[in-house]
Amino acid sequence: MTTTQLLETTLRSATKEVVIGHRRPFCLIGERINPTGRKVFQEQLRNGDMSAIERDVAAQVAGGANVLDINMGVPLTDEAELLARAIRMVQSLTDLPICIDSSVVEALEAGLAAYEGRALVNSITAEDERMAEILPLVKKYDAAVIALPNDSDEIPMEPDKRMELVGKIVEVATTEYGIALNDIVIDPLAMPIGADTSTALATLETMRRIRDTHGLNMTCGGSNVSFGMPGRHTIAATFLPIAMSAGLTSAIMDVRTPQIVEAVKAADLVLDHDEWGMSWIAAHRAKQAAAQA
View 1: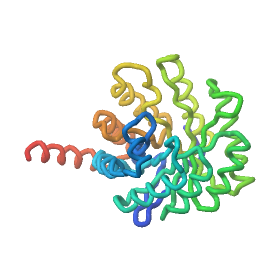
View 2: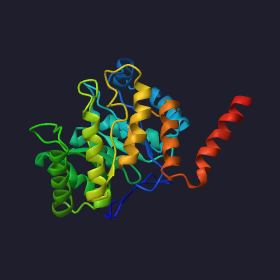
View 3: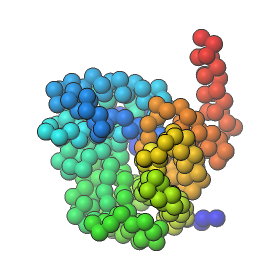
């Protein structure tokens, strides 16, 4: 049993606070506002049509998202301007906090400047250059940050190497840039099991060690593990509850899939993160009422 202090990461919109933590219900970060692999959406954004965002927000709020990830990485556009516009639009539609997702430093800064609240920045790696570019922005705008334990050499498969890089990120972020431990959310690198079925075990071991050594919150791509396999929803609905028991406290995922969301909510109940089962019972009653209506 860990004696490490288990940390909490606080995100805010202008009016709503969401706390990610090991003793709290799992945080669902809706991944849908992302043009990757969506050619029609990309073309709409290039033409200044952002109406799909409105539909994506509504669907994710209905699906139970706690936070919304926004990515505007569209080739041949001004990503900084597009991301700032999307963030302002989403803030007009919902009070959910936002995860600002970009690999472009200028876009991250534009997004942080446009955002009213306390954002989650997605993401940094253990590369010195990447940390030097982004951590000052995280500090300036009082945000939290997702960090991946890989460097310019490799995406390490061994938990030992991942833990070494987590240690480096923690040391650099806290001592050189003054980032609070609470505000570092680690992505323990969930890799596709289609390429190697043992990768999930390495990720779960990494999660346990991050929780027990550092007490940090964690997130991952909820569908990463199932990539390239049939029956992806079933795999994700199995992996996430197992990962929750190993210390995963949030995931960037498609909350429009009830099978996966319900598996996570059931895991919250079993792990005693749903006091008296009130959320589970309320959701069940709401579903019954909807069916009768």
